[in-house]
Image (cartoon, rainbow, N blue to C red; front, side, top):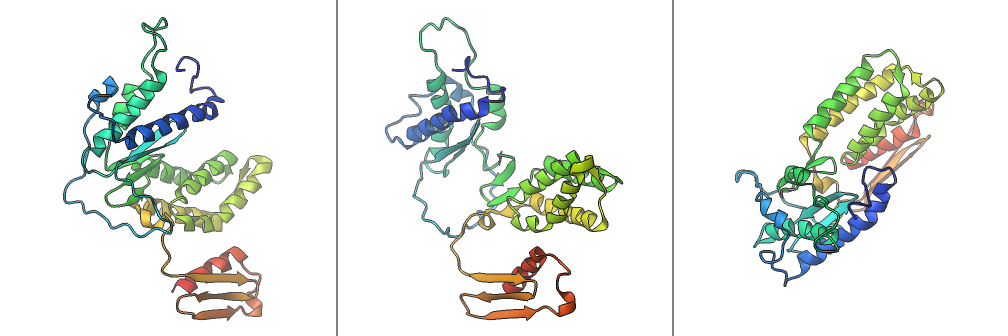
Length: 306
């Protein structure tokens, strides 16, 4: 299989997904098998793995909030995958860390092993040990799919290198009299990535997206003061993302407060389903149609939460 499928080709990520998902399923079956003795049946490359890298004892464990869905109890660990990035998670009890560490190499070795012995076509192991030793160690704080996740403090961070690079790109745009389309596409894509953990950021992307539309005709545009102000605000959001956002604010949690708000060109309003209190505010005639409906909805949301 390793000889037939080169991951570098443009059509290969989709094709590789069918196989990598199967390998992930094999890993979960191995981990959940109580009869599997990882000290007896393992891939020889597993012996080169480093032990668990734990955080210092003075780092406290943060309390996770109740989720809105019932999660099945699993104290043995689990793996998940996106294309070729496999993530393994397990509570650090008994020997679970070693079990999940040995399961992935074993599944990969089993899938990619030679069909004959000796193998008439020499090949390297399916695992790239250089990459695996650099990224495959089990850690309490680890970069996963572009995010630095701290499983003890339950924080998601924007990695420092991305934070510095993206802030530098924004500063470059602010210093230019003209901004080309590729620059805007790049920075808006990165801000959308940041909005994964700070959803409120998307409220302030509308003017930048409008600037991107204007740049389509000539492949460049000039940013007005309002759009530059939005970019300055984005730097603050990037700082927040680097400092860390609680996972409790990203997952779907059990609701203890329920608010509803809305807005129109005539006014704002909202109510609290728990306290049954409501409010409304009618906009003066001279203030109507002076800002976007999106802005009014955002203000209504903030007022309702007060």
